[in-house]
Image (spheres, rainbow over the protein chains, first blue to last red):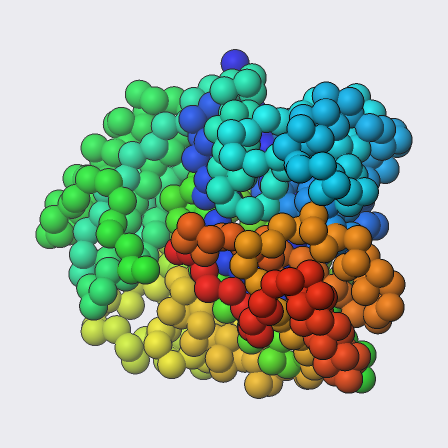
Length: 253
Length: 253
């Protein structure tokens, strides 16, 4: 079982304009980690058809799985389904099941043309169900199209993740200490990375209110090596005269 | 004066693993908006040399400006400077000014090899100064390399933004109302977008505690048209029997 790779395409002018801060990358990353799937790239792109179509085709070819968020509502700027259809070279067709479900949800007279449009999916797509909304997420090939609104995105990935074929689980261990600088441990860390070529040894400076420090993370698909590397990182802090704490450092907001 | 385009490359395993939530996209977007520069794409990629080099070369060719964050500290996983040098086909050389400044900052004996490495920049690069750190940001051609730590990133962009050639300012106006659904106004909105082809008319559902609603945004490089479109969006809410409020809706955390 090999690690599986994924890419996340955030379709949203509102992120690029700075109007909204992304909340979905972290949610997706955690859900994929739990399935042994590695998020390898995120792209945030604007609501421009050519930009969406070419990016979908580039990324679905380069990664095992492609997830998208945004642009699946009923308004004119919701063009993701049409763009994914175009990328796959298939027509948009009315998905009968989804049409009937949407129809049942709206009072008579309110299931207008714009809302009916949400039932049009690329030919061959299967819906992604979720517990909180009628938003029409769908899967087509290795592409999974989800909503941008964080609560709906979360509900969709909760439904979808257990249905994705799992890869090798990624394990990691993390130790941190205060009042140390990266430059104090950089040379030893290079040697540790050399001793564990199968792992990623990462070093992350952090700030915790007025205090700063460094977190060291060992991560990889060989759980036994991760445990040994964690012990080595802990010992490195000790040897330099700092107090290692297990886990991730507290965050400043 | 035409709109200028920018791309932001976030180099960071810690974002892709879900360990850290990005805080820099919004800061960069706001700084660029203020200079009439449009952020067109963001990519988050891992600390893998080939991935960084090919993405730098792809993005610096496709956009007027490329900004990067992350990977410029003293540790073995800080490989951004070397990758940018490789992308441009130039060697890393010791930047004498930066070397002397770094040397002066550390007590005797603490300016070790790892720290000296921070003074090595791609040939032809000029440093990006900042008020809070010795982190060695730099500019080379249309590529601007900055730190990943949010406080340092902010200080670097504060220094850099006023020095970037300005484009046409983007203006926008925003109105929102509670208790309305996108599907209620989608058809009229399509007509409004049709009347203002030079603008982006966007529709954004939001949740504000227990209340939900929709925000409508008109945005573009024609300030007079933005003002007229704003009046039209306000009138649309009124005509449907909702109370429009100017600005962005309050956020749930």
